[in-house]
Length: 282
Image (tube, rainbow, N blue to C red):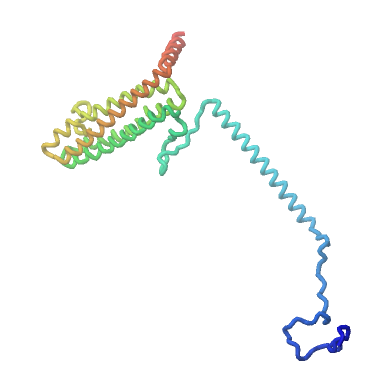
């Protein structure tokens, strides 16, 4: 049979033996697909009310953005004015778990003064440790029958010495090294010498001015070793703390004074004092 002969199955519409799941022959008649419900090229009409809402929101956002920009400019203007006036805003950041003071040596103190400042801060923390241990030692002495007066005096030293040290000499030194102020250096020298004198006095703790056993020094330690050896040991530890604090403090004041003289701040301070005296006389 020639390839041009017709297919004998062309006249049949359905083959009863065909597999229902098989693909229908290419010449079978398929039903046309239903028309798409929308023309893809058709324009979708947006209600005018929605368009107005979008424009209103855009206008509102632009207004808020302009207001925020205006506030930022005003805030920057105030910060610049504060900086020109020499006012420094100090954010409390130390200690990290309960910020009480502003303290950032690595960022605010010049590199050549950071070592001195760190050691000075160590002496401040050392003072707090000495006075805290002093309370512990005096408490043991009170338990052994020395009376409550020395304990109350030890508490007074602690609650006045720690904040007093920060306000009177550590913060002036911090600001002096940060701003290079001769007046702040002078304030530091005055009260830091008093601090050194108190530490040396506490290390000895003679029974004068203050009640003798209210300070954990060498003399009350020797006195207590005979009757209460444990209390005497506590006082000897306090003597060691006060001695170490005195030595570190002497090193700090020497280093600060050497910088103060070498940088010319001493001459500047004398000129300021002479100028103030002249103005007062006039």
